Amino acid sequence: MAFTTNATITTFGGKLFKLTHASSTTTTPMNLNLYLPPQALSTTNPTKVPLLIYLSGLTCTPDNCSEKGFFAHRASALGLALLYPDTSPRGLNYPGEDDAYDFGSAAGFYIDATQPPWSTGYKMESYITRELPAALFGDAEFGRYLDGDRVSITGHSMGGHGALTLYLKNPGLYKSVSAFAPIANPVNCPWGQKAFAGYLGADDKEAWKRHDATELVRGWKGGDLKALVDVGTGDNFYKQGQLLPENLEAAAKEAGVEGLTVRYHEGYDHSYFFMSTFSDDHVDHAAKHLGLL
Amino acid sequence: MAFTTNATITTFGGKLFKLTHASSTTTTPMNLNLYLPPQALSTTNPTKVPLLIYLSGLTCTPDNCSEKGFFAHRASALGLALLYPDTSPRGLNYPGEDDAYDFGSAAGFYIDATQPPWSTGYKMESYITRELPAALFGDAEFGRYLDGDRVSITGHSMGGHGALTLYLKNPGLYKSVSAFAPIANPVNCPWGQKAFAGYLGADDKEAWKRHDATELVRGWKGGDLKALVDVGTGDNFYKQGQLLPENLEAAAKEAGVEGLTVRYHEGYDHSYFFMSTFSDDHVDHAAKHLGLL
Image 1 (cartoon, rainbow over the protein chains, first blue to last red):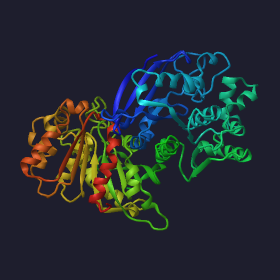
Image 2 (cartoon, chains in turn purple, brown; image 1 turned 90 degrees about the vertical axis):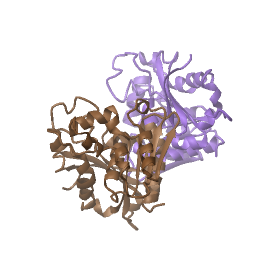
Image 3 (tube, rainbow over the protein chains, first blue to last red; image 1 turned 135 degrees about the horizontal axis):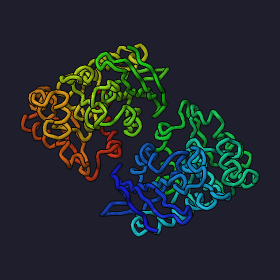
Image 4 (tube, each protein chain N blue to C red; image 1 turned 180 degrees about the horizontal axis):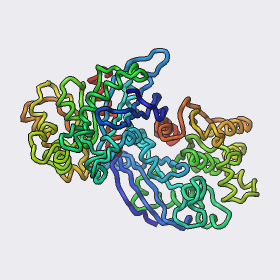
């Protein structure tokens, strides 16, 4: 399905498009933002640019990071497109869908739910890995700007969980991965346990593990992990044990997986003030593996 | 009066302080944000850093630009503090204070009102040029980080009007000025006419001129203006004649005033997407005149 353009905003020499399309996966309209750098839009020498997908955290829409993440600053210099999908289907009106910030709307956790009623529309894993890129790269208006063979993924908090797990589950689909304050071991934290119980069933703990970065990294056979993770030591969710990046580090080490860099930044919190400080670094990390650096 | 610290946020290697103090000028509590770069906070080699004051536009609080302007990106690299004052007194409960986005709350226009009831508390010119810097530079906690002799000023929209007029009225107080999409000739635009009629009286047009950058630049005797102005050609307020930067340019030219650079950027709008694209440039402009570059 084609994309409807709700707004076109000039920024950092390129353009940010606020888009909507009808998703057959979620059965709803889905919003997303797409940033195209000046290199893609050049009228004299247009270049198909690689893409960095940014998965947002709990409560977010595509707009939060577009406004406050500062990724376009460095992406513009290097010639990298940015894709900001939404965090869940919206408006399905399932019972309880809007009752909590950490389940239902804006809390899709980038998995395909198996439990009714969520299993009908809450299929964010399929949406992000299959329907959305296929629609975008095949789109008559936007596809010509993008090199669908060069894609990396990043994300924040719940979106960091999403980036890490979609990367680990799909070797070769993305050229690299990074995450800010990811929920790195959801089967062992309250946010993950609540979401996985609701979407996957309270009893099927083996299913939970198939969506947990710390469990998945143990089975990684893809060589150098090409993974960068940043965490703030002043992050209250880190201190409360929602993120557990040390568990991811330990699992990678035990499994002999190389190429995971986890950095702890003194005093930084969970906010966009943290992310925007290091978004240049995450763009550089992706750019290195996408052939831009 | 001392400042109350409501939040301390680590970002771009420094700290953003969300502060409140009791203002005798506005007769209200006033919020402000202060960013201190790492050079000021160094425990081994602390440096008194110069300050760039950023005046916000209509509807804004100190938070908007702190979150979306990305001035800290470049200020952090160069060692420049950033001050984000509020845009008006709040909570005076004058009749009509909260009725419009362009008059009253969040629309103080950086002038001292002469018309009752506004003349009691709406004294943003005195607050920004006198009370706030005196309080900050003399503060026991924050004063030691700041070099009160090296201050520049910038702003957006209504705050661009504020930056330009406070600079032009006070030669020597600020080392340079810049503005994004400023209301450059308020006596000739609807926003300015409404505000000046309300705060200064509908009939005293001579008083209006004393707060108009285009009028003030005609009398500038301070030499090189050291002024940078950026405007987006896709800015609806520019297209509607609210900004009138050409009038400022023409007046400077007629008066033989040198050192005004006005740049028109194709397609950019009035938003923080525009400002954040060029905030590095405005920090560099200030830094050059503050001895940092």
